[in-house]
Image (cartoon, rainbow, N blue to C red; front, side, top):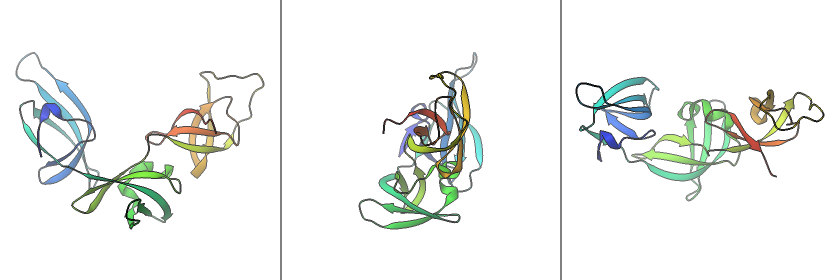
Length: 188
């Protein structure tokens, strides 16, 4: 599907130079002289190479349409991740590199989005937030309330995150898999 460079968004997948690229950074530039352009940072879907590319605002690009299916993470077997399509119950084995650094946040039974292109899994999208349990943290200081001071903690899957001082061992917290940042204490 052809789209105008002005309509490009972060997360779009493009077919460029006969390869598939994901837009990871984007800025509209209007220099004092000359025409406006779109400055992008692209990441190759197959081998994670990065490419900085400029597109004229009037340029048409080939946007790839992905088929999204809801699935769930089943288990990890070494560098292989096993996921299941929630509608057909088909199971797929994919390499951990398809998910990248976010793979450490996978929890059994977690709902995910599987992105297909021509019957091949291109990427996996994790939920915006997930709930984890605090396994290790420094002791709570009496009278400490929610404040801007953070301390290190180890949560499910041995992930190190920074949490507010009032969070204690056994607490369930909400974090963002995209960067591992603390969001809030779970209400459960």
